[in-house]
Amino acid sequence: MATILPTLSTLFIIISAILVAIGWILIAKNKRKAHKKVMISGALAALAFFTIYMSRTIFVGNTSFGGPDDIKIYYTVFLIFHIILATTAAVFGVVTLYLAFKRKISKHRKIGPITSVIWFFSAATGVVVYLLLYVIYDGGQTTSMLKAIFGF
Image 1 (tube, helix red, strand yellow):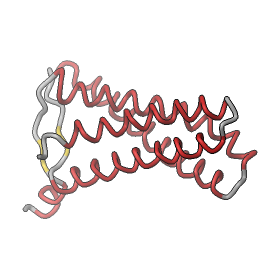
Image 2 (image 1 turned 120 degrees about the vertical axis):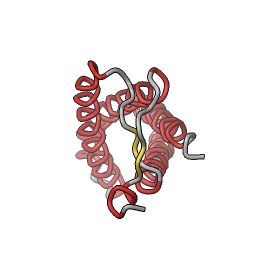
Image 3 (image 1 turned 90 degrees about the horizontal axis):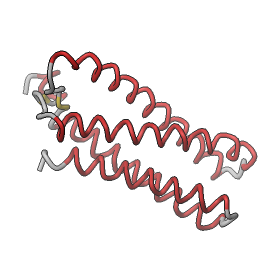
Image 4 (image 1 turned 135 degrees about the vertical axis):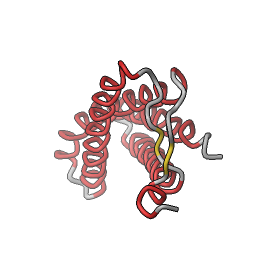
């Protein structure tokens, strides 16, 4: 079961990015109700990703890079870039949703496109991380956070 979790979480990120793109198209066509439904669905897909990712991180662990040592530094820099993007996208996403639900539409319109672009890059880099860890190269060691902290 634990081996399917990275694939499942990555699938939810891809779904989320596709839904955000659809939501962008819908709002451009002034289809506000459809935009709202699709964007909420995109946020729920992102939340599903986060839930799976954090559960796996805590209980199963994260997989270290198993590729060649000579490119490990490039992978690590790329991973750090992805983590910064993902964290920024999550914060922007929460703020963007908050503004929409509070009907602060002028601010929502300003931050929404920025949030979407950051989200697309975060999703794309997340897929690359997944490919590097599980498809292109065999994953390295996996240690759960609980085991790393408490020794069990």
